[in-house]
Length: 279
Ligand code: HPA
Image (spheres, rainbow, N blue to C red):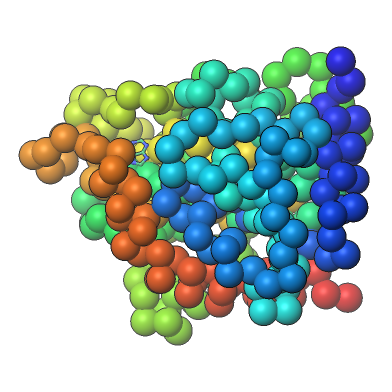
């Protein structure tokens, strides 16, 4: 079996052969947030099943295609849906699309997700810029021999979530009259939601949000020298905070409800990130 670098390279070349656009920004759209990519213009829409070596999503609410198109005049590569560890994929497989982005020439990734709110200041529907993460998944996409063509053995994670992108997001949200928080995202393996005791533990160790995605992707992105912005949509308050069970339908519905705000924020932030790569 060819190595990850070679597989990512061939998937990247395949994707680039489907479009004349050369995006510098890659976007991963999480549960209930995929519709943004429907609006891209000049778009090539490529089902994951057609992309060599690409993992396929089995989660409800994830469409499973790559859309390469333009948001205004900014070329973007957007994933409608991702795969998760809880589907049985390895962290390397989960991170593979980020490797492909990197080999396509993408320089910054925007990772989005649905998350449970642990911080009691948050409310359902809040948007939170991830400032840092706590990896409780027991997995890491860099496990095994390091491929120096992708990145170095021990990547520094102190600046994983790029400060100027976070600040730009908070600033743009302000201009739109929206409140956006910044918080620490803890990732669990899933697929069961957390217990109330686990949520109390996560709050104690400094987590503001909890989810089941994003971290493997962020680690692989940092490994390749890609800058990362991650935005969570608080689709529900985490287990035990409200006196009611957590329901995946509610997660999707909240994503749908804040879609307008989320899309407005993305549109405002994209030019700020694109400006980073203009020569
Ligand atoms: N926990 C974990 N993942 C999630 C949640 C949650 O409460 N909501 C959306 N994704």
